[in-house]
Length: 262
Image (tube, rainbow, N blue to C red):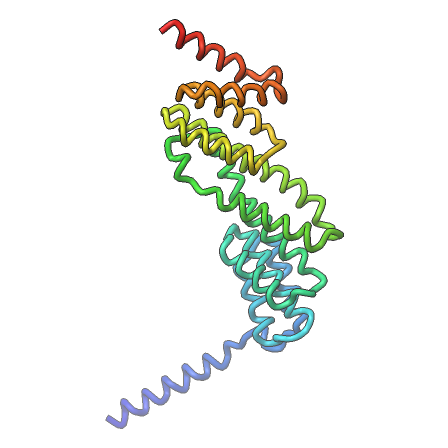
């Protein structure tokens, strides 16, 4: 028994010695060293390790400019790693803790970029317009637009404003196209009331976009299909006034001719 006890003590000593020999290479790092190491990992595409360096910096040195900037770098690392949820959470945390920070405008911009990245795949899917279109939620489109709008409203002199405005224009048009795609989906399936309502929503919320012509055209065709000729004529007058060469004018005439022939 004593022999076993002695062996256990020896093994424990060896294990402790081994653990002691394995030292943390960052134990004496300064905030600047942690920060530079994190930036190097981002540059090399090792975003997980970058986040670990920035988190270690905040844990050991929770105050100061490096700790503050590390929070923003964490959001950026998650964005580059295509992890939108933690990227947005980190950006929101930075905004909440440092609302007057000189770089807080970038936090808003980064949120917009994160949502914009997810939106692009959704916008591309509009051209496919499968049967699941009405079940899709363009939340990323709306969120990205609102993020960029908040940046523009709060920080009109920010260097990110020009790019944000361009992305907002794209997002505004994407939202309009989505509404028209859904309206057309309903129209093609004979759900004319739903098509009219979706077209109205597009007209009320996304004026002065290419979707305006489509919204008026689908609305007129839906009214025609429902036999609401007075509403159809009113819509056609507006359509002709604004888009005198619209293809929808001919489509409605063709629909009239088909009905007369029947």
